[in-house]
Length: 213
Image (cartoon, rainbow, N blue to C red; front, side, top):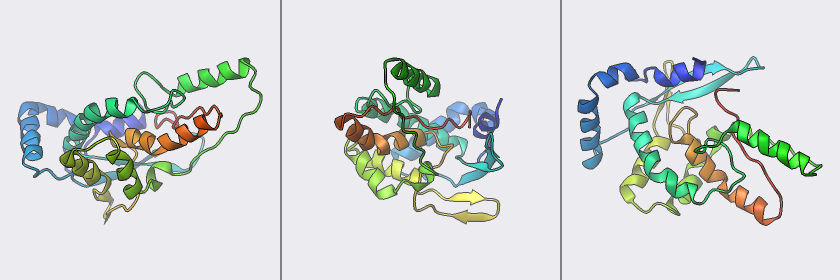
């Protein structure tokens, strides 16, 4: 099990790990359901942790939500992912159902064999941490109209981050390690995919996998 899998299965800032949450699963789920129904639910601070970045001395920052928050985010993703998936372009491979980094590489290989001769390789530095909240929520609102759901999504963007003894509220970004972050990151880049397609360029887009560096 890699560092990433260990981190996301571990405890968040409330010190409750997956195994402990599962011991009272029905009780915990019912409590979360009631909190959401009554709009009393509030995400707890994210735990900042760092994992090795293969091929580099740098560490990759991860924001680990509490287990209860991961459960709620997973439920949100089940609802909104099919909506966004209907919009996403076929050459987008990052963190999508039944797609992955290896599929993107196979598509690049196929295109090279088909006669493409020019390749432009671009990388967005600290992309997840730099996504502006306001513009991201505008993109979400194009497809989601439910006010309570929008409020929940925004609350996950603004939940506090705890790094050792330091605590702050992020003004930008959606944390690597959160369940809905890859989906939101894909949504924010969707207009780029559309623009490249309309301009006649074939862009193979993927995220660098947290598990493969």
